[in-house]
Image 1 (cartoon, rainbow, N blue to C red):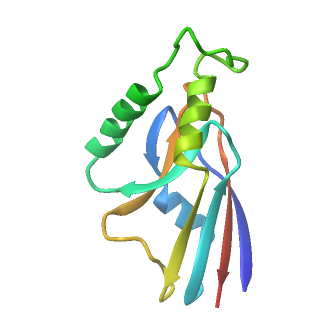
Image 2 (image 1 turned 120 degrees about the vertical axis):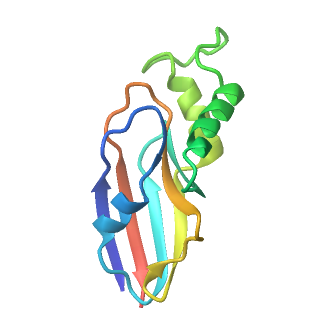
Image 3 (image 1 turned 180 degrees about the horizontal axis):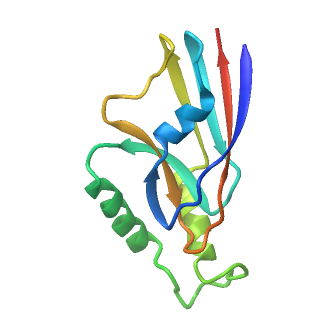
Length: 137
């Protein structure tokens, strides 16, 4: 069985946002076993799996990413879509735009404290599109 759902995510502000529930609500019932592949169709936002319990993780991730790729360095040339454009592309490059999650006994095979994050790197982002492909039996 192969199923594909194109999910238009809610519009999120800059930061790290748990989207686990939003994704799995859109997917509906899962097969007994298989894989879920999530592909974000954007170059200035990313997907990640990280801790889903303590909200301080989201704050600290933002602090770390801003130190790694600061906003508005004078050396940046690519500012076509705004002053945060290049930093957003770099953060996406190092984080990634896709995830694969196993399906185990009809449920996502995420660990107890794991959640799916939309990592929004733009200050003025639009809604994002996620292609969700389920392969299973």
